[in-house]
Image: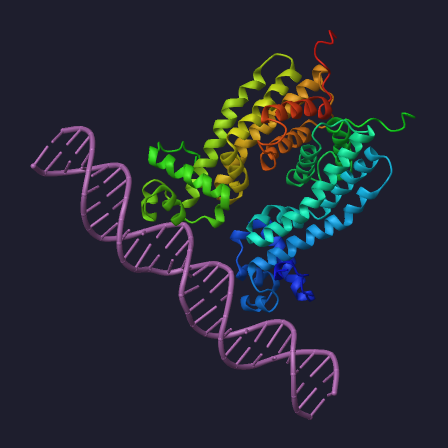
Length: 206
Length: 206
DNA sequence: TGCGGAAACTAACGAACGTTCGCTACCCTG
DNA sequence: CAGGGTAGCGAACGTTCGTTAGTTTCCGCA
């Protein structure tokens, strides 16, 4: 059990302030282009004071990437235990996923994009966390296949494709366009469950 | 007419070598994390010699981003003039796009990801180039709507969604999985033309 | 009221950054 | 064989980087 796997230390409100300021800067400029001096200035303190809250720049990134991943997955993972109609459940999951990502656009996009700057040890830890969600969706699709409600030859690939599709939305969607994010999410959910996964319509009084 | 819009100077083979080495490093580590010293070392020359071929680090990025975009678009833009069956044409375009991106995976991914590090002037130039392709697809979908071969309420959004979907494939696809890139491309083309754009089947002797 | 610890400060560190300099070795052309 | 351009070199520029040391300020609690 290495220290990198231990639970995160309890952090104060100032640490959260730093995390949020850094998140915003990482989103705008990328991890490599943002210096500790810029983060400190954004918070309104001197650079050295940052080290009262984080031991390194990488720890700021790690803390926030871990937080958004555990938050997001913790919020959505229980869907896989739902015993109801699988196409309906997945449909709902997709919509919620898309809306959540949009509402946490800065954090989620910065986190996904800048993950690669984590130390090797932290990177494998985060990757493992994300993997549980991917695997959950893959297994869900496979279970749907067995029930006959999905028709999808490659569940794991479909899970990756699905996630890639819905995670990318934030890079091009605009709120001032013809669709709201909820309407778009609905269309994506339809496209994926029926087009990609070959779901059979519910309510066909089977 | 500013100098940034002038045609690129003719560059020698050494410049191309530098460009390719830099591309690979940018792909692996990101623009901000790659130094001129690392690029020079990868080529096998000293750092200062790089400046015999490029005036700045940003010019290396700009040259290569511009090249991949003009190359790619030049290779695919004429599709929009084809007078044949639009769903068939778009289907073919999608497959070719996906395969091309996969075969130029390092360049295309690095270019898309690191574009944001361009100078403001260069960024607007590149964005304009990319925009012509997006608009081409959007107009193509709209024309298909008018012909009645597509049924898509938001052509511009669909074009962006379409491009986002197929550009993201390279981030998760593996060649050792159950599908070849050509098979996957085929499935994406089906999903998009029928599922997303509501194409009517050709050969329905309408 | 005074003590202790958290968190701010000033100042500085060595390393790396992108870039410029003066110079040299080579090749092609006249 | 002289002259000019190309492309390499070592050394150094000023700046910024992440980080540390030492010191001071502030605040809750005995």
